[in-house]
Every structure is written in structure tokens, then in C-alpha cells.
Image (cartoon, rainbow, N blue to C red; front, top):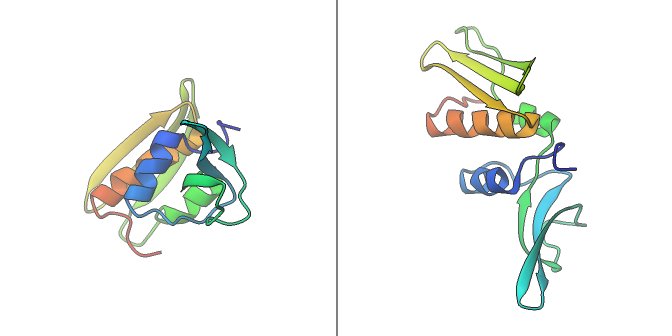
Length: 125
């Protein structure tokens, strides 16, 4: 399942950066005696009392919906399958360009979302 959703580390960063906490899958910390277990889950709601902490674990399609679309200014985003995994490339008329690489497509897309959010390049949907 881990290749189909973002890593826990990026899920936490997405939540901290304001990524919408809506999705099919979630990373959750489950209380086990004096420790926590971390797993990908499908809670009945994001207020499920079984979990101490929940972070949305978006699928690639959910991440793509939050990334900018091609616009009249020439901004565009492309995704490529490369030898090492995936490359997500964004070109902005106002902010140059960026490339994010990862062997997990969701992590590459999430890294791009975080990069664009930090630079106020997400624009309006």
C-alpha cells in the first residue's frame, strides 16, 4: 500500500502546510500500551477515536487535483516515468521551474505541492 499513498513524513508535512485533510486513506497512530503503531488505514471518519493522530495519505489522483493546471501565462506541470522512478516538473512564468524526483509517484507529487506552496505558486484552482 505504501507505493500508492504518500509517506508518513510527507503526509505530516502536507497537513502542516495546509493540504486539505480529505481523502480515502490515512496514516494513523494507534495507541498500543505505551507505544504507537503507525499504519495506513481507512477510518470511518477523520474523527475516528481509535487513532491518536491522523494524516491524510493522498493517492496520486488526489494530489493531482490540488496541483495547478496549465494556464494562459505558460505555467504547466508534467509527470514523467524515468529510470529512477518519477519526475514531476513544473514551469512557471513567474517563478522559474522545479523538478521533484522520487521512486514513489505520490511522494514526488507531494514534494512538488510543498515546493509550490512554499513559493505561493499554487494559484487558484
